[in-house]
Image 1 (spheres, rainbow, N blue to C red):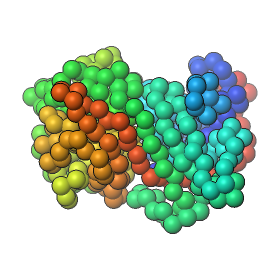
Image 2: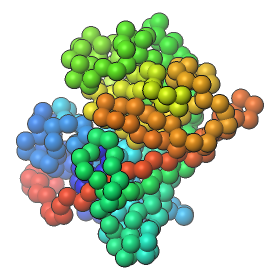
Image 3: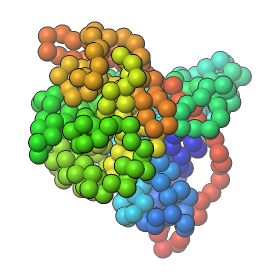
Image 4: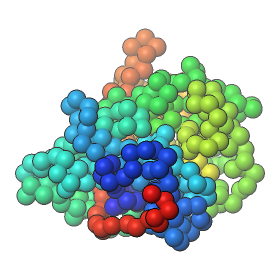
Length: 350
């Protein structure tokens, strides 16, 4: 399935090995990793197309489906289940309905999803006009050709899902090797850097950023230290925290973002990353907030401008004393079911 601006296989958990090590060997074989073009598997040679969703009936009260996201490395024989992926999340609701985990209503169906990676709950509202999933519609999202039926994702209480704190270092700005950064954990742990701090304008194309080897090394050095300060330990083998370079947007409620995955610049933007960027934009005292003038409390849309267009993030944010609360974060995505069938792995794998 394509979910948002990502693509990958969606599995029922019971169809994969229960042992995590064996499961990861299977996923590496399925995707054709490690290999730059993933020629021997289903991967597309990009971090955006080397993703896996694993779904099961929920064991958590009030939820319908449990979702485990896996980022399969292209270059290394590693599978990372620490992050979440909001784009792949777009396909979980339709998948759960079609797999019989949730009974569809007539009109639209809301699926409550427990994300195992971050221990957070997301509500996905799926179009089911005749009691079946409808993928066709007029909703367009930047970074994807054509249109589809809208899928509304509402992230509930996504603060500190991985680290346990909205600002896991205890500060809204940290200085690492002379560079001011904001480390935030809201739907996805991020290290946010203002473009000018790295000698950038912020509107550079992804291919230009990817070709700047010195810049990528600099960002990675900052990311490794940010991960340590965020309590994540040695993140050299993990894709979190994700580094993000931000700059002033094209309006008072807009911020421009270049999102790294983490060693290449995203051609568009991750949904969870956009939620974290938008959240940091509305919170005073962050490097992102200085790029605009958003008052608190805030209830409305923040535009996250990215290389392929923009993502509109709907936020409810409040402040009581020094305590910030992001009580709701929503986004509209689309998904497409591409194929259904069997994938074969060598007998030596399982």
